[in-house]
Length: 503
Image (cartoon, rainbow, N blue to C red; front, side):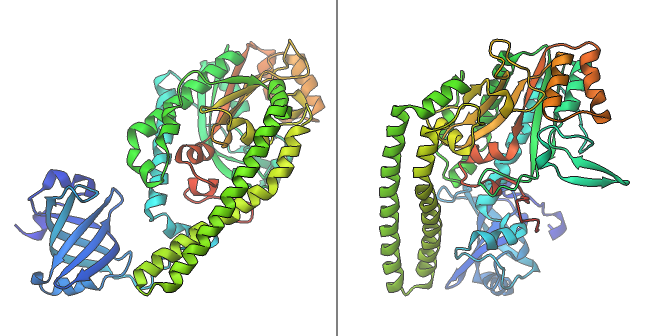
C-alpha cells in the first residue's frame, strides 16, 4: 500500500483502527527518549495520544528524538490497545514526516504569569486546560441554540450598531456612523420586543459591548449573550423559563464534557445538584438576610477560616521552596517551580480576598435598601445555596427603564436576577417589560431618554401592546461557573478586558 492510500484518522478514531496502518497529523506537545526508544505526545485537536518510535526505523528515529515542543508532523503507524493510556491506545510508528521543527516555543512547561499567558493567548489556547474550556463553551453554545430551537423559538439577528442606550449611557462604546454618532449594542432586547410581537417566541444570540471600567474577575468589555423574549409572558413565566434553561445547559455539559471537567478539576457533584426548582427570594428579603445577625456571624466565621487557610498556604509555600532548593533533577525542579508559581498566585488572590472581607462584612451589615446588589452581595447570597438563586423585585431606581413597575409595590419592578451558586453571582438578568405607553414614557423621562431614536420603541405600546418579558444570559459568566474558573478571562478565546486588546 502506498503512503497516499494509507488513511488519515483523528486521535479519537484510533480505537476503530487497532492493528491497521494509519496516518496522523498534529503537533508534538512533548517528547523523550530512552535508549533505543523515543516517545512522542501528539495532539490533533480531538485528543492526545502517545506514539512510540523505535531505533530500528532508521533516520526517522533521529528525527523524532529532536523534535521541539509544538513541532507539526505527519506520522505513519499502527495503533494498539493499551488500557494504561489515557486515550486507550498507543501508536507504534513506522515513519515520521516533519512539517516544521519548532525551536524555542514561548510557552514552556514551567509556570508562566497571567500577563505573559494573556499576551500569548494565541498560543496558550493549545494547552490542555484551555482546550477543555473551549470545548465546554462550545457545548454550552450548542445547548443554548438547541433549547430554544426545539422549543419553537425563532432566531432573530439584532443590530450591533444602535442609535440609543438600553442599559445606561455610561457604558456605551461610541462609533462614527457616516458622521452620526451611534453605539455598539449593549443588548438586542429592545429589537427583540418588536420581533416577539410579530413571532411570539424569539431569541437573539451574539456579541454585546459594555464600556464599563471594571477590572473585576466577572467583567469583559465584549461578551456573548443569548436573549429570549416572549409575548404574553409575565414575571413567573420568565422565572420558569430561566431555570429550565440553566438545567438544560448543565445537563448538556455533564453528558458531553466529563473528561474536560476532570481536566479542569471541577467538582461535578456541584453541577449534578443543579435541579428544579430553584430557590427564590425577593430583593427586600435578600437585604434583610444580608443585614441579619446570623449572616454577620457566618461571615465572621468565614473570615477566621480563610485567614487560617491563608496561613496554611504560606507555610506550604515555604516548605515547597525548601524542597526546590534541595532538588537537582531538572524535571523535578521544573515541577516544583510550577507548583510554587501556582500556589503563589493563589496566595496573592486569597490575600486580597481576606484583606477585603472586613469591609464586605460591614457593607453587608449596613446595606441600604434601594442600592443594586453588587458583586460582593451576590457572592454572599449565592454561597447560601447549592443551586442558582432567583432574586426578584428590585428597586426601580436601580434597574433599567423598560422593566415593568410592580403594581403591588410601586417602589420596585417585576424583574429577576439569577445568581449562580458557589459565589459566582449573576449570570441571568431579566424582567417583565413595561407594556403601558404612559408609564413607559414617564419612566424614560426619569432616565432622560427620548427623542426620535426611541419612537419606534414606543410604537410597540401604541399598536397592539401585550404583557411580555425575557432575559439575557452571559455566555462567559456561565462558562466560568460551569467550569469552576476563578476569572472570566479564560472563558473567551480572545478576551477583551479594560486595557487589553491584544492579541
